[in-house]
Image 1 (cartoon, one colour):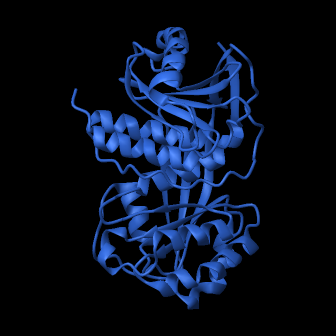
Image 2: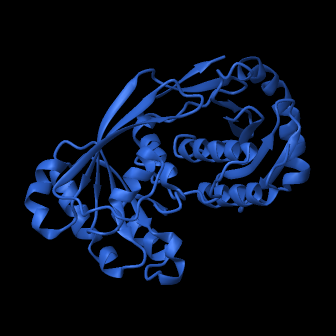
Length: 338
């Protein structure tokens, strides 16, 4: 099995950066517990190669033995295990690997879970040889739901309450930022160069599925026209939307400057909507007018998760929709002892 080690290491480095100070180490192991890659947390004073990996490996082996019984049937998914010193998150990463996050004993798991799950899916794609970006987006945790309880020496499986969840999802942003291209890339897996400007709104449907989770998220996607003449009718379309993606074009600063107006318009119509911010057209890096740092600062100002995409190449398009789905469904997280 040939694995892109450079991309795997880059992915783990992104994960460490986003999870932050409570992270002690991350480890990728195979089903037998053999370590395939590992890296220490950026603020950890401990050696990932010696103390952490040595200690965790001894701990991981018996836990993995229990996981593997269900892992082999694809039934495990994600789980946690707490010790006196650490909190561990185990995520199934395809048929070949398990992604282990080692956190400080006092860390909260709820904010880390969406990062861990997205990273595990990316690891699975790396092992399968599929195209994948190593970038881990910034995910804002709104504290929805109850944090996963700490149970020492007890393996807990993280599950989403079974069911199919349907959400009205709107895409907002100025005309020409690539909203329609994003939707078609996500729904149909293709990119066209001759999309006509959306008149009023366009509606499409797509299910968002996650390996290891029994639930599905069905998005009914409303692609809103960005032109000012449609502002009055847009308010009707936005009402009762549960999810939304606010999009700007990284090559056109004016689309970035109008984000706060769009954010206010959407939140006025649907105050409880779950939103993320997307900077699109990163394939045009030479024409970029808005930096990643500026995009991140705006996202933090608006209290939104942030990711950059390219509808043309497909980079991070699926990740954007999955990030939004996880942000919504994590309120349905439950645990069971095994």
